Each structure stands twice: as C-alpha cells, then as structure tokens.
Image (cartoon, rainbow over all chains, first blue to last red; front, side, top):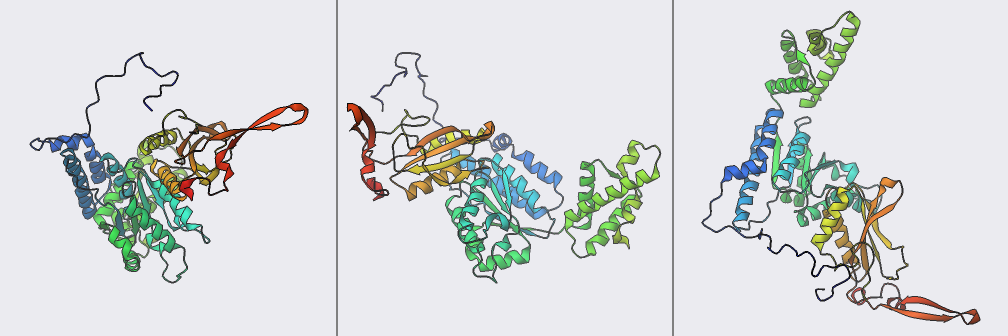
Length: 316
Length: 142
C-alpha cells in the first residue's frame, strides 16, 4: 500500500507527529514497585464496594466473595503491568438462594464492579429467563439464544431461574439446545461476557446434577442466606428512607411484629415481602389521610402509624 | 481487480480490531448492524444475501464480530460486508457500510460489447466470477 499514493493524500503537507507514542505494552522492570493503594483508588472500585455494603443489608458471604474477586482482578492488573501473564480468571457465577435475597441486585452491582476493574467492556446487565433463550419450535432456539448472548456481550448475562432451562421430564425439550450453546459461548468467549445463573438452591443443585458440564464451567457458586429478622427490619428502613417515609416511634414494635409473623407464613420472599408490606402500608396511609380530611403537615405525609400495619391480614 | 465499495473503500482492508472500533462507533450512534454476503461482485448488485437478521439492542461490538466470523466460516470465499442502519429518519438508511471479507483472488471484469439495432453499440460489465456456477465462483469456496 505504501508505494501507492492516491489523490488527496498528504506527502509534503503538515507532517505527522514525528515522536512515536510511548509503547503501552512495555512491561515494568522487575525491580519496580507499584502502589496498590493508588491502583485501587484509580479504579474507583471502592465506590461500588461501599455502595454494596451500604445499600445491601447482611449477605456477608456474598460480600466477602465479591471483595475477593475485586482484589484478584486488581492484583491481576498490576501483575499484567509487570508482564506476568496469568490468563483471564473464570468469573462465571451461580447465585443460589431463596426468593428476595438480593440475587438480582448483587448481579447489577457486579456488572458495574467488573466494568470498573476492566474485566468487561460495557458493564451492562442483561437479565433473561427461559422464555428469552428457548424457542418454540425446531430451529428457533439457536438463533434466539445467540441473539441474547450477543446482546449481553461486553457485559453480564443474568439468567434468572436457570433450572427451568433443563426439563428432565421431557427429553425433546429445546432447553437442552440453549444450554449447549450457552456452554460453548461460556467456554470460547470468556473475554466477551460473564454469565450469572440464579435460582433456588435445591433446584439449581438438581440442574447441575443433570448438567455436569455447566457446573464445572462455573467457578463461583455463591449461596445467598435468608435474612435475619433484624436484617429485614434494616432493609425495611432503607426502603422507606428511599421513598421518603418513616415509622412513628410506636409503629416500630408493630413493624417488627409484622415481619416476625410474615416470616413464619408460607411464601415469604424476604426483601420482596418487605417491599410489598411497605407498599400496602403506603396505600392504607394514603387512604387514612384522605378519610381523616382536614389539614395535613409534612409529618403526617411521611409517618406511617401503627394502624397502617395492624389492619394487615397478617395480624388476623 | 480489487472491488471497492461503501465507506473506507479506498483504504486497505480493515483488520478485525479496526472493524470492532467502527462497529463500536456505529453502536454508540444507536445504529443496528447487519452482516451480508454475496459471490456476485457486480457493482449494480445491491441485494446481497442477509446473514441473519439485523442485530438490535447490542451494546458491544463482540456480538457483531461473532456473526462476521460465523459468516466467514460458512463462506470463506465470498464477499462479506457490514451495514449499520440509522433508523432516526424513519426509514431504512444505511449510515455505514464496508467490506469485511473478500475472496483471496478477485478475477475482475470484462467489457462486453453488444451490437444492437441501427449499428448502435451497447456495453456491459461482466464479472469473470459469474462464468462459474453459484457456490463455486471462488477457489476458497470449492
């Protein structure tokens, strides 16, 4: 190409910048020292980790694991600067836990974290379920799954209720095809996306038992514990705080009692149940204010009274 | 004879890295990308075959590169090009289009001369590649 100079190409015009840019690939000399604390500050990873601590209550094992991953990626980055090639760590994950234990919330923050540490290029989260991956007729599944995978590239693919992908009772189920494509991409395009599977513990175990290839390609199996009553209360406070509500002092024991009762009932969905409880309390609160009539002040508008919770069917 | 068409037609062929950068630019502008291929290099052949549907809602060029590579695997000796559509005009508008693969050997064209009525002469371009049947037009495909 160099011998062919076309029209409009500069030959003697303004010269190109003569100094070559400094080589980015140059490894540091072996005796160099790197300030880890500065690396850490430069990556802004602490903002995400602190937000994780602040906005998600409890979940100690999850937070520990995510901190470990962050540390590994940071150290890997420094190692790379010395020219030590350690290969790309496998970060496909499986989140197991009861409903409402924060699996999606953690996945969202994980995407952001991996993006800050330079592991994924975009840091977006694509949440999907079986419907988005599995087709309805022969030949429909592969393009559908691939399309989702392409959308997730550069970010995190979050497959909720992943055990639905495999239906043991129907051997012609198209889910198997989706799993095979998923496995292939998880293995071959590790640079391009991180896959996070989520689901209830027992059913995920059954899923992995029938798909051993999937289990071995996932490096991190993280279990989300159920919340303790005190943690549920803290979650409730966080939620109310965010929506501009507060509890009257005499409401606090009622709220605590509500949570204790609701927790013992079937279909308790941890944080999601707390959210629903607050939503319903808001309804009753608004209704009460309207029925009461007259003037209202800021306190009336933001304070939830005991009767807002006491009229719940949980107390019957 | 090297076929030139679309954006960057007078530049040397882009490397995969450069293609990824162009795709990233297109995605940033909100243009969905699609991949097309053909073995008929005639300049007036505007209907190339589609390799799958246009790819919407992508965030990262890796997905587009993946499809380009799949298409290269299936048609190692075809022309493959990438289109990026700008839908903001309310109609299908190609904003960016460039060739991402060409056959290793491009036989070129000849000028056919046709004698018609009243001693008039018409000329037409004939790609040598079209002398062979479809699917076997280039060495790499056979």
